[in-house]
Length: 482
Image (tube, rainbow, N blue to C red; front, side, top):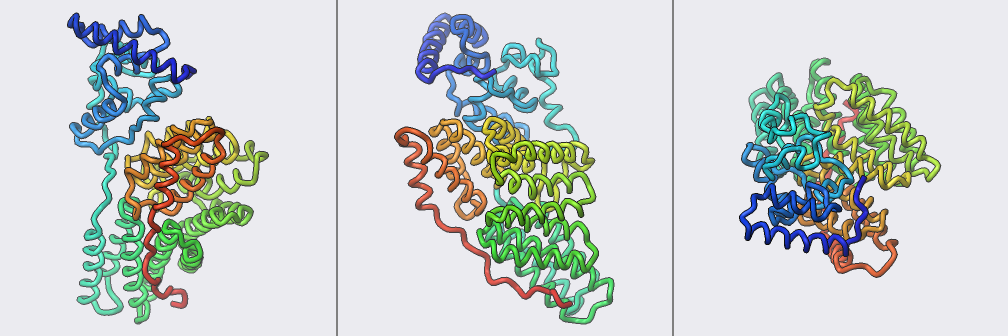
């Protein structure tokens, strides 16, 4: 259980710990002995915090140390933040095995010394030598939070254009192969580009496909081109949604669903209808969103796909119906988690990036809407531990976590988390959905009793001057009649 210690008392404890550390340094004590003395003299302090104090580190120092360990292992910077470390130190939640091992390395301590003996698999006298092997186990995806350059997209389009130049205006095998490769790149790297940049390039690619469909094609080739056009339309719709243009998003997604039906691509149809449920939810059309999501789920053929339609499409509009929805939200959440757990491809993102971390973020948001802030915080923390720092999903989960802090009366902590998002994500990369969540947080903070703190006031000021998203250029003609 978390320690319920007042801030004033924690300040006293930190000051006393500094005194113990200073005495230990004068006596040339090892860090291990300093940490033991802090815990003996200050029994209210849990081991993780005691060890950090024994080193004389701030939470920011510890987070930088963890990041350095990751970089030394050839990995990207992990999404550890002060609020997450605070919760570990105060016993609200244990760190995941990955972070527990990182803490062992950082402090050169055993799991037992850090209070993690019940969690850890290494023996208590083992200073986590298995950490390196765990990090390098097959199938582990590196954490990379840096946005990709737009030049990658232009190069893909140029390859398509060159193939068209060789094969003629209707294209051929190489053109279709290049289009398929481009679509796979957009799919797998969706979150690694600014939405406006990716939207402009996908529009250009779809225009090329539309031009190809104006020329004679063999039936099988036309069907494949139309299927590619359908997925490009789905992608354009999703990007329009993330750029805040819900009306355009709905048009593109409806086109994608129609093409999916015409080409017998059940997955495309399901995805596009599920995405329309999302736009309906953000438009406060919750019964419509629920109906669309249920239709999308009925078309989903794999556990991962079912988890996406439940978590992505059905959960939040159900939760938004009111306080009486909590039992139904819990039921849908359980179904979504069961589907994700049984999916043989659960570690492979669904179309345009849906994965376990995104499911956990949607679970958190639904729990918050249903009035269960504590459960929402647990889901948001789990999401943050499974997503690269600095990506759009990280921003979304961090803001949802901030809203759980505001719901529990911790306005300063909520503002600090939201400020971290604004400090990390460039304005053009901050999706409309994250902006909506920030605006919801502002409303939450205004409802928090008491005079707003300087941190909350500063957050409001930064939100006021946040520049609008740059919308994508004029959409290309939809290939509905070919």
